[in-house]
Length: 360
Ligand code: NAD
Ligand code: DAU
Image (cartoon, rainbow, N blue to C red; front, side, top):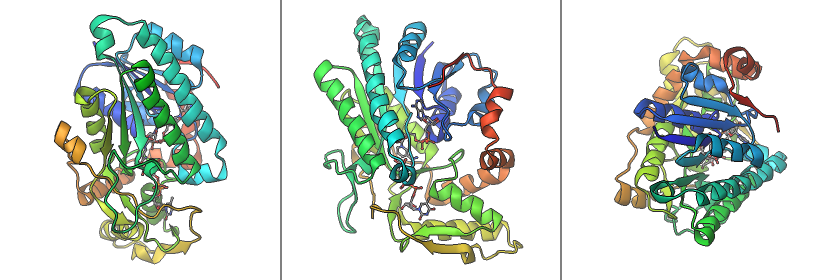
């Protein structure tokens, strides 16, 4: 049976990826997550009784733990999702971003390299290390500039994107210097079920439903390229399966929208679903607030490489994806309540058997 080590698999994209892989085939997943505020084991509730999902609360900076897990479970691929991921938090406190995104990735690469060097034959040839990265490493686009391609020079503008860029460079170096079979993906903004409501889309959905203000930074004309998370998961699986070793693949929704457009669409769907809400029309809740410092103006991804080489393209449109996402938040009030109250952090102890436990 295939065994994968996934880091950060209790977060938004990592948990969607673990669930996606489990739906596709029988496989064992070793899921290492530090369970920061963004890690939520409720995301993995449906795997509670699955003996082939082994959750380990641990830090990717903990080399002893990584070595022990690699030697004990012998994975044939490692997917690195673990990161501090929120730009606003990186502006207020960059330390954790440097620690996890740079030092953590370095420690993981070191341990994976030693593990891979000890492999032989087909196992060694087929092993993959996949780094899950972001389009933010490319910086900000002007209104008429061509979308980011894999050849766009790195120009990160926030402590978050700078830390992800540093990690990507390390991954590249481990391929070129030591031959570690790496793959790197740079993806645009994801949205969908299980996203922590500090990010634009879940925040607007939940505030809109509760009749709270919808804060738009600056003039709201910043552009993001939105991708439904399940499409990202399919792309990652394909890159693992057929991507060329040492290569970078950009992933995006080909779906550029200003923040105002995104919020307006969410408001329109909420008006349709809750026509009698006291605060309808929901757009009356929009409040323009102070801009994010160093706010990147536009991101957009040129997906021609992954389309040409691997045949990938998104299946969801923004219209179908945003409806599914809003529906998910409506249908999962206990997830929402526990995230908003912080109770999800205690939920771990009550409901989940953690096979191994390490605190950083
Ligand atoms: P998230 O913040 O929801 O999840 C991150 C997970 O990593 C959490 O479960 C957290 O507990 C865990 N983690 C943090 N520090 C850790 C450490 N030191 N050791 C082990 N686990 C740790 O993030 P996300 O949105 O799911 O993003 C996942 C990855 O995808 C990140 O690397 C991010 O840079 C990248 N990415 C995100 C997006 C997006 O739109 N969200 C787009 C492109 C790329
Ligand atoms: O592009 C990929 C990146 O997308 C990922 O690498 C990051 O991990 C992920 O957080 C995301 O970064 P952004 O900064 O683009 O996402 P965020 O949801 O924080 O913001 C999206 C846009 O909405 C951005 O222009 C800022 C704006 N915004 C955000 C919030 C939270 C608002 O106007 N109001 C808000 O309250």
